[in-house]
Image 1 (cartoon, rainbow, N blue to C red):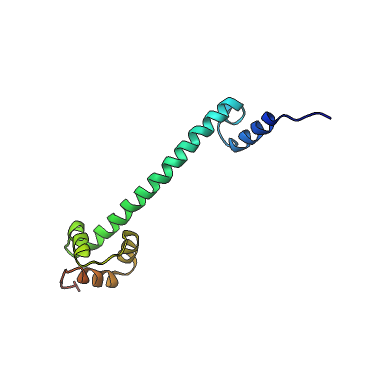
Image 2: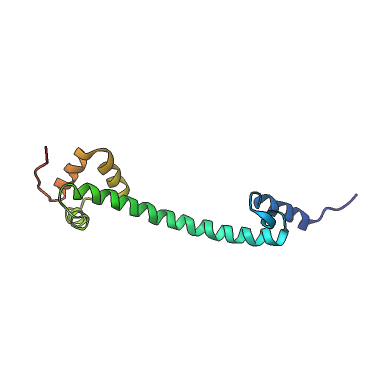
Length: 118
């Protein structure tokens, strides 16, 4: 009975992971190995960038919501901190986009008395 090598099994696994890559990257062992190393690094970095991008999006949404009422984002956040209101940016942006009335109440609680437009 023929003994199947461990390296052949590793190579098969590696090529399976590189399936869908273009040209030699999907069929040659060494090239596939290098491509997979880079792909892993890009994926790791991308996961970090995703968090940064989402936070930026939330801030933009909140900023648009408070700007409509004549308040700057930085003053709004400072007001929240001063009043010890702890709502994270993700939830705030969701409220600003989907429920303007509740968002106005939060702004009022943060120390900004205003007259709502009709």
